[in-house]
Every structure is written in C-alpha cells, then in structure tokens.
Length: 287
Image 1 (cartoon, one colour):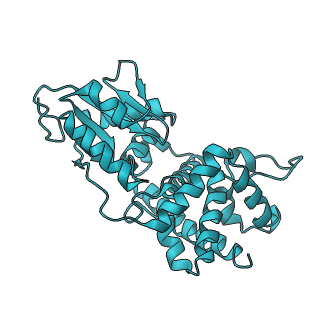
Image 2: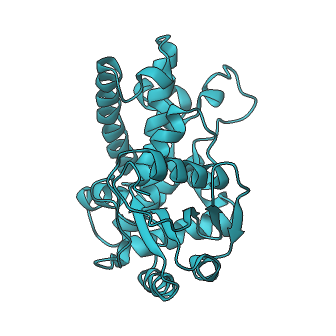
C-alpha cells in the first residue's frame, strides 16, 4: 500500500511513536489501545520489520542515546520515518486535541497515514552542542527532580511587579486563566517556560557569552534541533495566537495558520515574542 506521503508500506505493520524523556507511547492504529515502553530500545523487539513514524526530536538530547536507539531499530529491521514536531502541534490545535503523550502518538499516526507531508530518515545527530546539552540537563533536573521549584523561585525573583510589565508581554508571561484574576490573593505565577528561559540566560551569561548565543540556544524550528526550550517557547507563542483569534471572534480551527488575517496576527505575535525574549535577557543582566 502506498500512503498519501508516497511511502510504500509493503503491507508492513505501521506504528507511530511519541517519545518523551521517561516513556515511549506507541500507536498501532487510531482505534487501538496505546502501548507504553520505557525507551525505544525496549520497544524495538516488539515491532520487528515494522514501519515507524516518529518526531525528529526523539532522543535528541544525548548523542550516544540516539546512536544506541538507531542501532537497535536497525537490528530489528524497523524502517523509521521522522517529521518536524510542528506538524504534530498544528494537527493537535486544528482538531482541538488535548496535548498528552497518548494523543500525540495518535496524531503522528494520523499525519503519517493521511497527510501529504514529506518525511525524513531518522539520522544520528550531526554535531554535539555541549552548551545546549548542559542547558537541557539543568531544565530536566528542574522539571523532574525539583518539580519546577527552581524556575518558580527565579521567576519570582526577576520578573518585576505585574503592573510595571509591558502590556504586550503579559500573554507570553501568564496564562489566560491567571490573567483573568483581577485581584489575586497572592503573586501571579508565570508560565514555567519563562523561568526556564531565565535559567538559560543566566547559564549563558556565566560562560561570558552574549545575547546572540542566548537567541540561538532559545532555538526555533529552523535551527533549534535538540533544544528543549524550543518546543515550549513556540507552544506558548501558539497559545497567544489562539487566544488573540478567540478574542476577535474568529473560528480558531478554521482560520488558524490558513487565513490571511491569522497569518498577519501570527507575524505580529512572533515579532512581539522576540522583543519579549530580549526583555527577559535584560532582566538577568545584574546577576
């Protein structure tokens, strides 16, 4: 069978995989239960000779782990195709699907089997960015060992009083739920990604590097491969866009990333997100 993306399945089993740091979720079909494994290496023997779809950022935080996974997949004769994670996020948003590991694996399966997108080979990482790996480790430790305690403390320390923050930056710093509370009983908590961006900035300053390196490490879909901050940062940008469209009374699913109005608003938001990132960089100047 030849799929819309022109990949010939040769009647092999098709699986879609959502990889996270601790688990691997496998979708064998849209109406079938999701199976869970600890790693790609553990999963591979269960799907010999299969065709696998996965995001290109899977196991991209460690060069050796990526190489190990590729070898195990090859040993089990699994044909692997990978795509840009932005396609998963876009599909999820357009279809109003909650972001979970299970849902993402189903999204990847549907995109792979139904969309005319170009898929690439799952390759070894070309180069090692030691600074990025170091930043990723700091973020991982805070996320899974400290439950975000460090970034919350950092945000509270560096983010100025609410009424002094530029209005255009507020949707990036706080969720709509937080912003709707007019007189909170305690200080508003920023999005967790803000604290992680501040952590990144401090790490770069300590190494004597400047804002240009900060923007590079913050990453984007073009040059942020293997960057944990990238997906969180652009998910925030996407949330701001969706909120803006809703306020204008527009159908998010119908016009997002499609209509000229949506594209114009997205362009404006991207410019504002860049200014906001520079503002966050400046906040760490005195540390």
